[in-house]
Length: 410
Image (cartoon, rainbow, N blue to C red; front, side, top):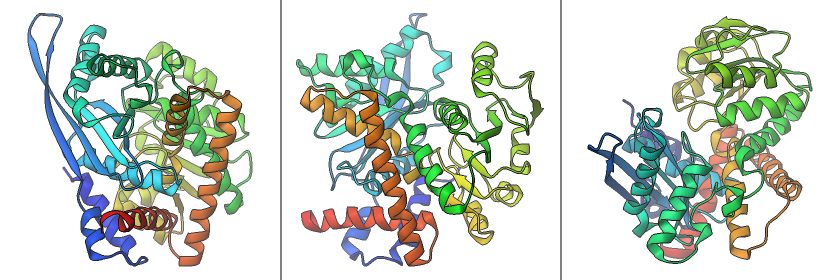
């Protein structure tokens, strides 16, 4: 398996051509600051004890506390978690919020656990990493296969250990425990602001066709948001299959069907296609919203689109990225496109610190200003440097991180 962190190192090296980064800072950016591996014993419903392996990676905190989600997935590995922690640092820097980059994960298929087993695992993980997190040190959040309920267990366990309330230690919490309005769909909403801004620059009109890879939280929400904004969603996929209707899917009906059947295949108002066939169907905008490396070089050669918007983390392989650049297909990089989630997590921390909570309208207004502003900066930098939007986003992110590091401990 390719080490995901190698992709990070390659991108840093690529970006270095455009920046005057000292050798000392470059070496620091090429390594994770701290990496913790833990073994979590969990008493299963059968009475046996199973050991689950978990990780927490803390990449860089020059601009603020480490920040990043926790994912529960059977394919979690060290390289992936390290890469995700670096991408989080870059993500926070490109949208200019005062946070660094962290990430966590547990090797587990949560679908195989009961609710009680899942709770014991969640609490056990937080007990294991409690010494290295805190609202001014490292702030976890939800990621793949984790949600507000799991965050509430983790928050409760952490506060029990510490013996005091510390709502800002974890974001993505339920509203009743200090969560922020709009956080549940913030990644997709932020992505929409970026995609919509790019569509205007590229002359893509409302009513344009959209294909979405992945129908989890981010994929489903971006489909609903874009449909409401006037875009035509022609294709969506999940891990089991994909569906196509060239005249447009009614996403509320698709979502209801998915909830009832547990899959997209068989939806009565669409044609079943293999997930790989999505690439061959022409769409103005293609949105990967699944997992890493989901678009390969061959997929990129097949894809018929004007714009690729990375709502997932690292969905485009470097080889596929090169194909897109050669074919003049614009790619909105993940560190910009999916930063809406961490922006609203930052808002949640601010609200926790003040004990004063904003209405949803105010959250969305602040999010839109940040996301559209960040896109404009990336677009301008790409034009000035005559490079891709990905390189432009990294130029902005790395220059901000390097500046903070130089003031601290170059």
